[in-house]
Image 1 (cartoon, rainbow, N blue to C red):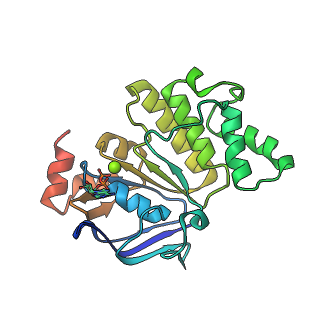
Image 2 (cartoon, rainbow, N blue to C red):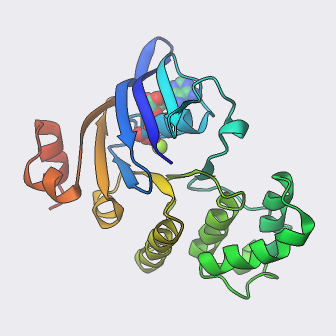
Image 3 (cartoon, helix red, strand yellow):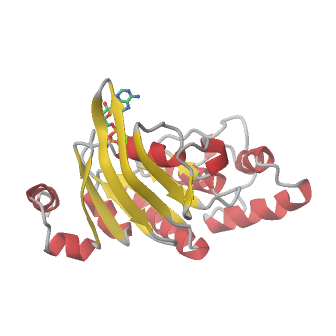
Amino acid sequence: MSITLDQITKRYQGSPVVNDVSLEVTEGEFYVLLGPSGSGKSTLLRSIAGLTGIDHGRIALHGNDVTRVSARQRGVGLVFQNYALFRHMTVGENIEFALRVRHVKAAERRARRRELLRLVALEGMDDRLPTQLSGGQQQRVAVARALAHKPPVLLLDEPFGALDAKIREELRRTIRQVQRELNITTVLVTHDQEEAFALADRIGVMNLGRLLESGKPDELYARPATRFVATFLGAAN
Ligand code: ADP
Ligand code: MG
């Protein structure tokens, strides 16, 4: 399902933190929003989800205008950096809960639960408690939970958080596999350009609320059109 953003502006106390952003993410695309802290990435992602109202512009999912549709009805899958699991519930129960909230019938839930755990490479972990999982495994559960109701779109806000390098790498691979297998349109937010380049079909670079450039990773790297992007991408290379 495609995502269309048309001249999105969001202001806090009068100043735009997202400023006139237009973007089309195509069906099945893995799009990464990359930019320094405070550039408006999370605000833009929350706007797509419907968690933050916008002051100007239009948002469409699969061509349908959802600008005034509630977060719940938009039904996108969301994963945040520290998107806490219910700590007193097992992995299976955490997913079960998400399925029940979305009114998935009891008969279907069992099979769906198994399928979701397979998808995020956590087979057999049904009965574990979150505290018995690594940070990376917990995020996998969060991904499974976000996908429980078969959302049209998956939004990930800095999902690798404070995970160490090896676990990040594994989680990255899982997220990419899941995305390919489901062919789910995905937008991931990060300030980490290495992450962006490892994952993205296309990268959009944000600074000060503006989407400066959008392009395939190699094109963006080889031919940045703005000084900011050249410097930002050059800095760690
Ligand atoms: P990023 O995710 O790129 O770090 P954010 O979207 O979180 O950026 O924030 C962009 C700007 O908007 C920041 O200056 C932040 O302080 C401000 N901001 C974000 N949320 C709010 C809010 N609820 N109220 C006021 N200012 C906010
Ligand atoms: Mg953020």
